Amino acid sequence: MSKLSGKVALVTGASKGIGAAIATALAADGAAVAVNYASDKAGADKTVAAITAAGGRAVAVQGSVADAGEKIVAETVAAFGKIDVLVNNAGVYAMLPLANVTAAEFHRQFDTNVLGLLLTTQAAVKHFPEQGGSIINISSVVSRITPPGASIYNATKGAVDAITHTLAKELGPQNIRVNAINPGLVETEGTHTAGFIGSDFANAAVAQTPLGRMGQPQDIGPVAAFLASDDSRWVTGETIIVAGGVR
View 1 (cartoon, rainbow, N blue to C red):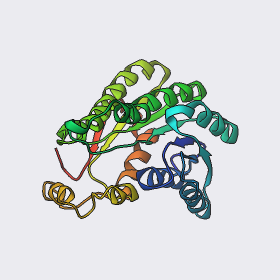
View 2 (view 1 turned 120 degrees about the vertical axis):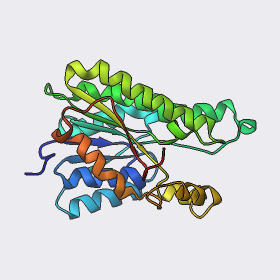
View 3 (view 1 turned 180 degrees about the vertical axis):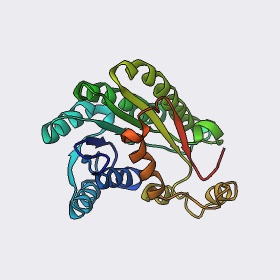
């Protein structure tokens, strides 16, 4: 039997990149998956199609976690009846030196990466079964290595780590485990669009990575599947760095 058989997972920001890889990995292990997207319907439909073609169950659910977390959760429950696994993957970023920091950009990143995560989690835990479940927050290794020129983004991921530790304690009595995955630089559509791939920044990051390569979305999915399953039933409050050895 697949280790997530009978489970329902909601993955936010799952139209592409890490989110799509996580949704696919959870479905491959037997979960029914709600593939959330904010604007990329074609990408979400592609993820759903890949899951269903492989024999899995998935639906696309539209909405931005910044202002529609309850809607996303409600549509997931309407489709599958409950939520056992929540993956808070949706996020935005921008590399900005201090001189270019603005209140608008601060709120743009914090509203999605931090407030959206909190409110979506708040809505989702109401629909977890009595036996509990798993919440997986997608953080980043930047919360540890704090690269220059990204003070806002680094701060959002530091907040995600703190929230993970706090909610692990708060939700533990409900048998809800809360962990974070902290990826290093991963090659995705987003990092291509942002100009990271092939840049001096990316080349330097790879040079500092003990395993000598950039990450791929498929490097993250199996770790999420582990944290979603009973294989990690005694694991909570952890931030797991998946970054090829970067510290």
